[in-house]
Length: 119
Image (cartoon, rainbow, N blue to C red; front, side, top):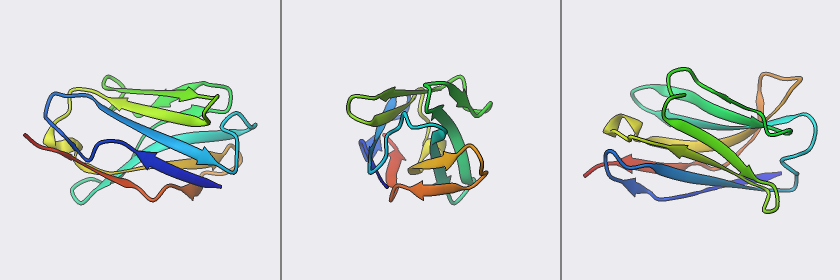
């Protein structure tokens, strides 16, 4: 299983970030997997953002729920994160990852993509 993030490396404050994760070697609709976005920064450490489930259900971190949106494109086996009203505090490495419903651990991760919010 491979996950690959894609998106802009530099975005301006107040803009909306859009990141995609392309999955190969597994289907994002296979029972019972959950597909997440996670970010990491020196200031905040690892922060889970949201997931979309095998059935299309979504769940968000309470702290980011008002600004985050996760969706999927099953025909291209991709899922996408949109994060609005960006500030420099959103600067981080963004990862996509997979988790099985039977585990609290993520078993596959993308390599991560650096996103910098700066004018």
